[in-house]
Image (cartoon, rainbow, N blue to C red; front, side):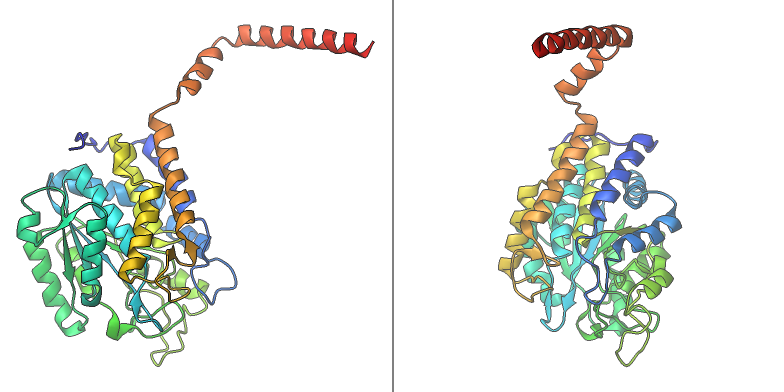
Length: 387
């Protein structure tokens, strides 16, 4: 078991600094965020969220999450909602489930948390398999809560009339200390769920907005992760989404309400693809607990993306069950995760070379004298060679 080094929640400037770097990395606009947008909008969406929260988005989410875990104690449950069924393919995409699997792993390793993955009933079987590919066993809640390295996968209702009751039952049964939503379809102000291009996806979307509402009613922290504006949590910046996305105000479906999410969460992480938001949280967990194994690596990222395709999750850009997320190949996602690993490790495990460099440069007077001497010698050598 990973050594439990609990943060004392005097979360300081080092973590804010690392969060700044991580935010920049995971908000890289490799993918536009909308197939209708003429230019990438993720940086504008990030700026809107950053203005609202006033600090790095990954830091805000981690700080709230870690405080809640500290209060609830080791072994508490954490709900992660994910799964976006995309038309015209009518299959769930790879963005979200992969991030849910890696974040579930990190939460369990760090805090013995019981990850409860909530998704569409049609995605539940695939999600169980993906979680097991990440190294965990999937069991029912009563068994998962008694032993580590276990997770739970629950299908959630597609019927709005049943959603509140189902949400309250799940909250009551599992007593989560947080609810995290990764790439999850959200209703707009008229209660209609949309894809990014404005298609009404209400009939095929789990009504997890009721789960967010139920959590907030009893004071459970909620975190949203999204990349386009129509996901749970993006209600925090609803007006910005309406202004920035071509379909933000006018979706083109009979509701004419636009795709902008109306569901707010207490924290929001805006990223280039939503899986990266999960990686950002993992990176801060790893950094703060000084345990590099809490952040999965690039090879695992690529492996899980390929396995998700084998299970039938699709790349929404092509509709194919292929090893990519949001039109970005698996190896690119793996490279980004590798960069996150390097950034985190290099901050708390200084290299031998860096230590020696600091040692060599402490005596600046001696170093300046050496520079002058070497410079004079090289000038003499250069003059001799020219003759």
